[in-house]
Image 1: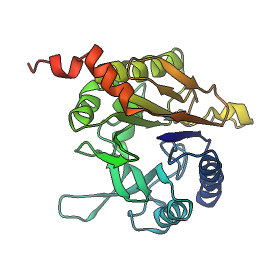
Image 2 (image 1 turned 90 degrees about the vertical axis):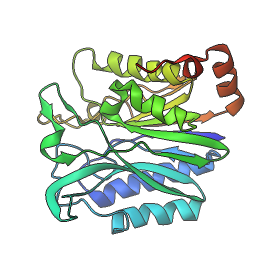
Image 3 (image 1 turned 45 degrees about the horizontal axis):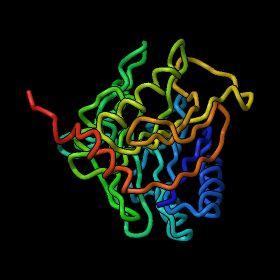
Length: 270
């Protein structure tokens, strides 16, 4: 299956972000991709208000993405924000950090489970956590989902693999700082080896590469998106600038990895 990773840099304007998403989705389709992955916060970049633009999965932003996926005949994975809810279903003034997955024969979503309360940032102040792993099938492969800070928690990716995932997708808007790019690269490669899955690591590009001034401490992206093999080897990667990666994923490579390195079969519960 041919896939694409779209390393974009979103901003405040939802319409402009949709235009960016459409442009890259069309390029992905022209390149032969059956699935294209966009980063976390594709709807609106962090550092901007989120509650006022959060919408349900059948709202106008998601419907535009859904219509584009249908028109192009491609599966799109993109980060958006949905309204947070109390146990009784009433609004609670927060959002959920959601990955929308839509396209031919595919319709699902994942709410980020592990919230980024680290490095002086408190995502839980404004975001509700999800609760359940999510996988989906496309192009003869099974994909698991994760978002940004999730990548520091191996159990989620193992859970995806035990649910049949051949590929784990990590969508991020990674925070900048000393050693942070190295951590991103280390963690994404580790999750591939942990689970003997391909990892599609899709991050927001570095805003500095397009001359955008960093304001505040919001995690707005460092780039370094990559396609990683089930043996943990980077097959292709980007630097900080916006760009599009293509890769052909062969399920036989996953089978080979799980025969050679049967960590899932050998694992012990404690």
